[in-house]
Image 1 (cartoon, helix red, strand yellow):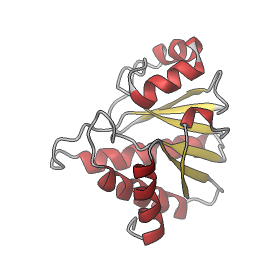
Image 2 (tube, helix red, strand yellow; image 1 turned 45 degrees about the vertical axis):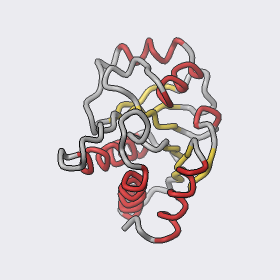
Image 3 (cartoon, rainbow, N blue to C red; image 1 turned 180 degrees about the vertical axis):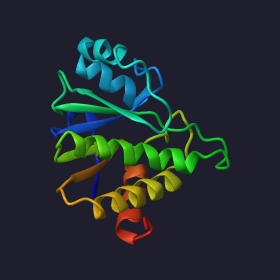
Length: 169
């Protein structure tokens, strides 16, 4: 597990994860950036998937992206922390990693799911992300390289602290 500051659409990995909305047809933030960079073929394939529920994930080709695949997951909207948000966010990471293993992928890059317009506090989200990914990786025998791709320096610092400080478990 590692954390970097970069534009996730530029990463040459087996899959990048899209923090999508439930329609999977594009939106703002990282979702819009991924759809723009992948080209119109991505939205065409996404139309065939009939959307995605919060906490679930679906996989498509990467099209014009350097990444071979896009794993789309729908994170929860922050409602104060008492509406199942923690479990739904953990499920996003877990289901995305399950798809990566199912498709024999060796590297996956995640954005900070739900911390943009969905309002999830980045410190809480980072702890859930690192704990869920760490727990998943400990339970699988296949090598899987996971990168947390942070858009801002502030988010990167939070992820680095959680990864390095052992707060993820």
